[in-house]
Amino acid sequence: MRKAAMMRGMATMAVALTLAGCGDGTVFGQTREERIAAQENPLTIRREAQRTSNRSSLFDLFENRDDPNTTLEVNRYLWAASLDVLSFLPVQNADPFSGVIQFGYGTPPGGGRAYQATVLVQDPALDARSLNVALRTRGGAVSRDTQRAIEDAILTRARQLRIRDGGL
Picture 1: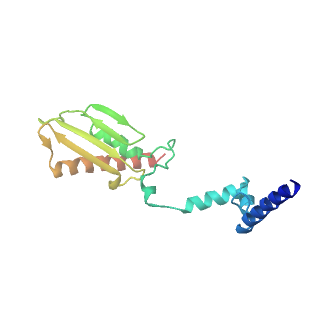
Picture 2: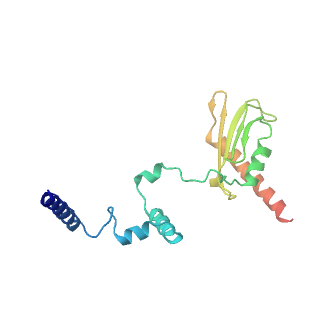
Picture 3: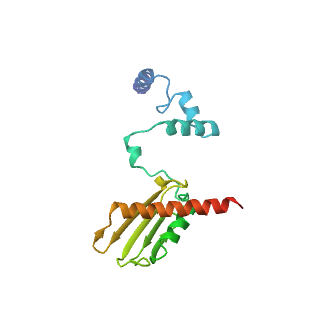
């Protein structure tokens, strides 16, 4: 009986040594260096952050990594000039955080046609590329010349406001 128990123990020990010999010095699938690196300390946290920030893939295009507390900046002169030039139109909706102003239908002084406009100020720069104006009538879109004239009037008024504030 004692001899059988001893044989079983030796067989168990042989299996354990055989399995231990198959590995490469790892415990639970990790080497000593990996276990040390896996510990949470400021150095390993920083290394991980650097490693993940350098990686990019096609799926990064579809992720929204923007901080929701960050607001878009709009040019205040373009914003004020849009409200000033299109003052004959009633304001339906204005969102200064996204830079969108929606105007309802209104008739300009001395005109017979009613217009509706949507203005997008999308950049903090006082630049023509920062301003997008969509102008329409009840019959559809207006001519490109009319839309360009409104954009030019807004840009001119914004420059006037900027020059006036420059003297402060």
